[in-house]
Length: 330
Picture 1 (cartoon, rainbow, N blue to C red):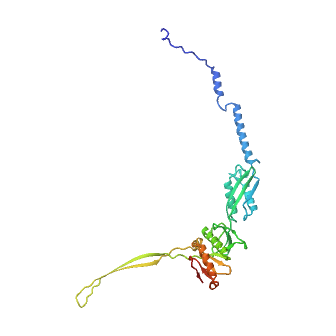
Picture 2: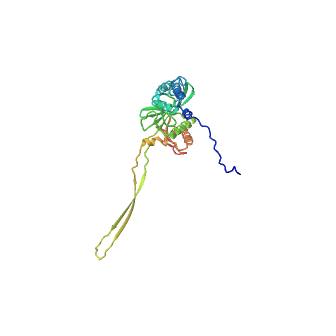
Picture 3: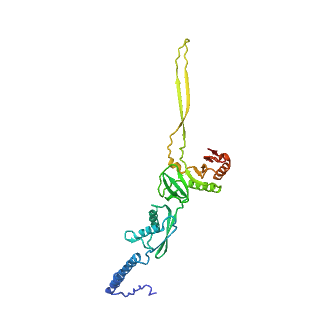
């Protein structure tokens, strides 16, 4: 057809005036106008003021402290130490007495370190209650025995830790260390398994009608360790013997000697006493009874009760029941 060869004519599109176009592009740039800049600065100021009010304002200030779990520790002293720590700033300028910014773990650690200068505790739990209060739970150690050593007295818990320096007439049975090693609050003076065995022995004796005066950890004896030293002594002797008859005789002697020599093994009685296998019990008005905590305590107490009923053994000074089913009397 005649019209297929014709070129399509481009229809011109309307364009903005150069001045209008540049003005529109300029208006689309962020924060370029005075109004946008003013709004941005106002938002920054509002955020800063809000942060200052939250940090230093009264809405989240910690006012009330609830102290729980204290029987040995004085709750008034806990409150006093906690108030002192809360008044100290954290990160130089940020107050610690703010419920939103309070780091419970850090405060509990600092508080426990302050308390354990006089009384050993297991831990402290801090809980946020509401806007102005927190709960401080003191997890105390329960004393089981009066630990005596080197002229000192202290209450010891199930872990063998000295809870505090004890006063007289506490109502607990004395567990003495015959090694006479000084101690301090918070120190581990005996293994947990020794404390557990002492409790079991005390309970078994109480049920059998024996009255305990005291328990003691004896001075341990260093074990004798023998090392085998093999010494081979080879003696080759050549003797040229000129006797009446012209003869020569050779002696070849091979001597092998085994010598057993005791090796010197370093021994620390203090460390051995920590895990002492022996526990001695002084019966009220009776003998000193020797127990081995690795043996069956119930059978040992039954043996003790059986032999103490006889007339011949009532005046015994020492009864050794460390061997199961047998007893030795002194």
